[in-house]
Length: 138
Image (tube, rainbow, N blue to C red; front, side, top):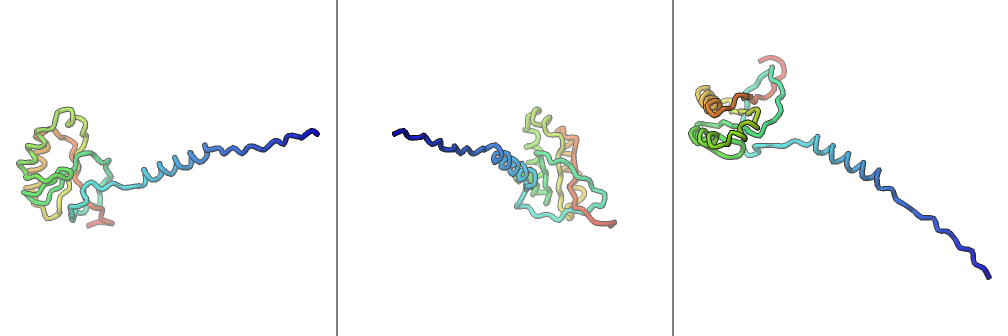
């Protein structure tokens, strides 16, 4: 008696399309997510109807008062900010192209100029003032 061999069909799952879909999802979530640099500091930014979007930098200065100035997440006074910026290496300063300055709308003009002077004294030329967008004029 002779038995016929049955050939079993081999099922092969092609993983390339699934990997493509997962890769596209990862890219979508990376691009669409927002990153909050200073989540614990609440500000009321002044408004501007002519503001322009700016690429984020690694250096954000948030001004609350003369004794409460944040460099990214760290709290400094005006003199402490000067010392911290002076201690940065020249290579780090060169890599930081722009500095974003956020100030509460109640911050005095004098304090804002002092912070800008500290930044300029330490070699930072590209400074952007962050505002909130106002629809229309005013």
